[in-house]
Length: 142
Image: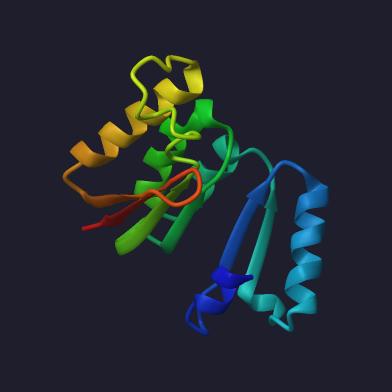
């Protein structure tokens, strides 16, 4: 709801989830908040299947909070989807502080390290790590 409130009056919030109950709860929350129906869009499906079908350079913000093994593909899709000046936010980017621990080598931590490096090295992006909670990696598309 906070994301929706922070958007411009013309913006549309799109949410993707494989769990139809989560989408139902989101629609109910949007309705209860008084948000007009044309300000939200819920899509049922796997992000890996849905993201490639969305319009290039059409989004102001992409927030990724999904299955970590597929983050690399989601990040590439997010960059494609973002407008110039758009923001990419990756939730849990510090993986309970394991990303900074070289001894942590589980698959999730390794993927998050790779994503962090790829985003830092991507010349299309300007990024910062916010060490709040489990970490938010924020990048703006140039």
